[in-house]
Length: 414
Length: 159
Image (tube, chains in turn orange, red):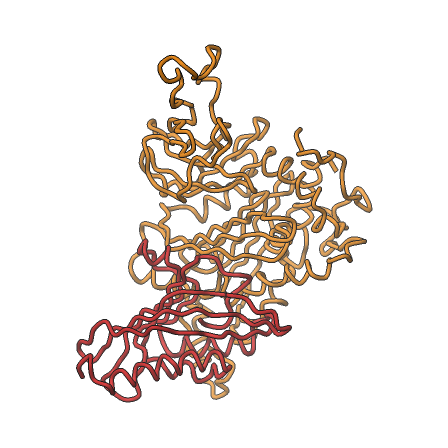
């Protein structure tokens, strides 16, 4: 394995073989960060690439990154999802500079080498020289210079890619519970409503753990309690796949009781702590199963959320040991009427960089990162709900975080 | 009122200056009063705006939603104390029709953290539809089109 001169030895020592004590240096060590790029993002994992509807026609493409690695995902002439590194085989230049578009082929601006929609090299400028002088040597074969390809898979309108031949097929990778959770939310054709990116001053893992952390939600995010929104929460739970890295947590809500509670609240005199406009939380049970929150993660960097009627894909992209980007991809569905779209937009205030119940997640990782500055000895504790990473039918637990570390340790060889 | 009426220009300039002043001087409770009710306030990115995508980063469709935003960031949301400094210019009246002025302006906003660290936080355009039928004027619609679709850390205080 090439690690750019950095030794492949584990840079960080774990205090035990367990997953409930996590060394702080995992968030600060540059060598660990390099190893993660190789072992996780380029390893046997499935990474979100784009929505299938973004590349509906042959030649439609999106340029993105898997971890830090630039990749292109393009719809092939045969309708297949093709993905390959965004790096010319000649001198390593970025082939594609636009974020998205439609093309018949990819042509490098530097020396004009061209590639078809499968990443196969098809043209080399002056391959046979000029007036029989120069040119590539006779043994040069274009077919030996295909761009490094990723395997792709699509599920519920989401397109994934993996660099590794070892990665099991997508549904096996997700496990039956997480596959079911994904297909529950993505049960119609998605429609892009908007996107934005939150730049977070912390290691990528602090955000991914935060999403898996069902313990912090009612403590850090005070919006719902401050406005005395009686959540009338009914049972929920956490499903974790066998390897540990994928999960979903959910909670049910008595929608009818909540609606009656609002109406009663409007009549109360102590009005200071009630919303002036309830439309930010007025939701409909669009899945017909009373689940009002479902947070699903796919190792190493994707989140699929349903928070009431807000549907979003979030992608965590590492950008250095103490920086990460979180892209929010807000979705509706092709069956939405105008009222449903407006409902999603109003509830959209709950989530994203300015979200009433999410903005704190943008800063709390930075606070941890700052506390770890030259202060990263020892280990943090993730023992709520035990030491294992098993599915649980309660949520005062850090089981899904332990699941992350279980999968992480196995792929990092730690 | 015609587009050249000095009273029109003055009223619009006052409203836009008062908007930035309410935010930058931490008089956020007065900020919702600058909007008509119902209204439309949307913070979005150039990329979303130009692609015709309706979802931005912050949205209000009524004065009540604006009041809730202020109350939430005062009482519920947790973030490091900070302020903005807006510079708004130039303010251009693009048209007047049926008691509504269409006004475009540009802004930059610096963010000053509580420890003094100052950075360029956002640049963009204000696309306004201003109710000029009565004095003082009120925003019927303010779309804040950010040049970038990246937000550093979080967006708590409106832009």
